Amino acid sequence: MVDGETIRPDYGMRLIRDGYDSPHTRYDFFMIPIYGFDAVGRPGQYTLMMETLYADEIHCISFDFGPEHLAAILRALPAHVSCDIRSRLDREPTAPKQLNFSHPILCESITATLGEQQHGPHESFVPMLVREMNIAATGAR
Image (cartoon, rainbow, N blue to C red; front, side, top):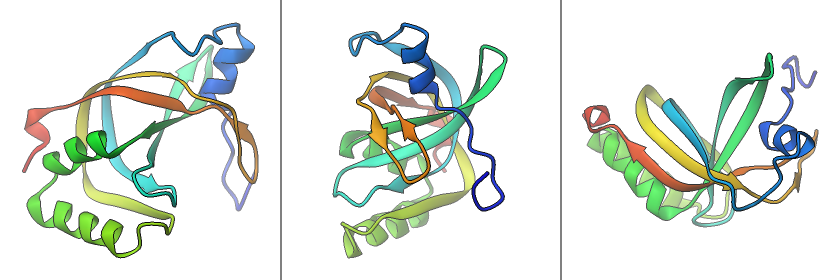
């Protein structure tokens, strides 16, 4: 537990532990509601988190993505929300920040590969690197 929250096991670490360790294998995820994302403190680098059930256990997945996928997310948001997020990112491009939406947008699919192991303050994890992201057209307002 950290600050009253349970730390879920990491999906990427679990894949590696189970022998699925090729960085070339593509993993597909479908119908993902996006409630927000984090700017990680390096311009053009973002991550979104979700949970998934794998081997009868809930795991946390971090999807790392860049500016091209950010643009797709921003297009799906209402114009005033997109403008506000862009302004916040431009104002402090190297400051880590969490950017949440009042209403989720639907990502129809994400194709990702395993990234490299990272060491966070509470655990090690292996992010999924987003290669393709398809945002539902109905998510735009």
